[in-house]
Image (tube, rainbow, N blue to C red; front, top):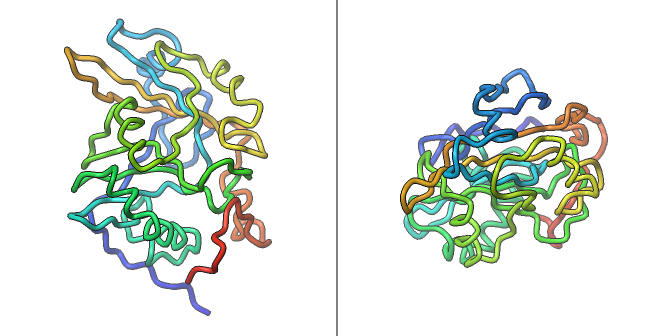
Length: 248
């Protein structure tokens, strides 16, 4: 059977989520980029002043997906912005089916024009999980290219009962070794294999507001992307979660 064609329709007219630059020493691929040394130091060594606020979260190893509210409809999207329901990838189609089941939860969180972005952990990519929660973990709430600060994300997603990544640290800078040390026991989400890494969110307080300035990530150097995917192993898919009834 020939692969299902992928329609090049992006309902938002853009990607659902961009790429995050890497901290020094992080494992990178050909299309990845590093954060500048000056910005990396803000994450891991020295804040500019007391207005910098740094949040460090566990980095999860799945598929980046989004649920976007357009009017009163919720669209399940892949990272590239295409409809997940039309993807040739079974795990993406499962994401679309899951969003359809939980649409009222997404509507409780999202205003029109907003999207909730997170990690879809149904299919094991390079890390296996014994999930103590549902297979979607929300890590950003966005409108166009702007993201909400972390305290607003956690407050908003509470209305839908969504899970967020494990909080490693909040406050001043945190070094990479310290962050990874706190993830050694399988992290916060039931990782069977070593946790992939961590994400740093640098936020800035200006008067009575907080804005997200930039994000950075660290991936352990020995991590191999997609090491469990069937197209790389020649073996059957490894699932962290499967619905009770088969999906189309």
